[in-house]
Structures are given as structure tokens and as C-alpha cells.
Length: 166
Image (cartoon, rainbow, N blue to C red; front, side):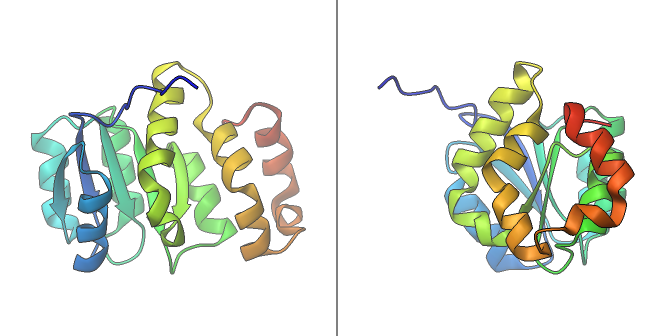
């Protein structure tokens, strides 16, 4: 089997979370990349304004991650939402609408490097990162939200599921 080249190697990544242990875990997992950290909205916003990142990993709660996502999108920085407490259909939809390339539960931290590698690969190729996210993580959404969770906003999901972007 041919090994896929790592898209993480030498990438400049911003990780934002209000929990230091999560940031340390991200640093350990993404050891091939150059990772900057921020523990609050103000520091992260400043870093986004002053640097060009290949990727941002944003917590939703505690650091105003949705507002940071908007700032990343304006700077053309792909962003992944990483959350524990905001893991719900409403924040997933908001992340999609605001331009995130994926939405991950913190329970997936152990495989963050392989997920990001695949997401960056798809993004670079102009392919849907959301299609990959739902193929890889859709069952965890169903487990977390219940099997019929998309029924609450059927119109959005019917439109989204046709091409995996809004």
C-alpha cells in the first residue's frame, strides 16, 4: 500500500481552546506541523489578523469560536470546529453556514492527525470536506444526536446532502 504524503508536514496551524490540556494534546498529535496556540478570543483574533495559517482548529465554547470562524473565512484560512459542549445540530449547521471545513467532537482528538490530513488533502483538491466528514463521522453524529436528528431542519439537510455545501 502506498503511503499518502502528509499534508500536515510544515503546515502553520492555529489551535484555539480555553483548556490547556486540549492544546497540549493537539500539539502532541500534530507534531509534524508548526502549531500556534491561543486560549482566548482576543489572542486568537490577533493571531488570525497577523498571520496566514494553513488551518485553524477552533473550539466553539469559551473562545467565541464562531466569531473566530468568520475571521478565518475572511482571511481565507480553512477552519475546523472542535467541540465537546457545543456538540449539537444547531452549532453544526451554524459551522457549515459560516464556512467551516469540518466539525469534530473532542472525543476524536486521538485521530485528529489522520482526519486533518484527509481534510487538507480534500480541501487542496477542491473536493468536499463535508462529504468526507459525514462519511467518516456521520455515525457519531447519529449516535450523539439520535437517528432522526436531521428531521428538525429537513429543508437545510435536504439541500446540503445533495452536494455537501451551502
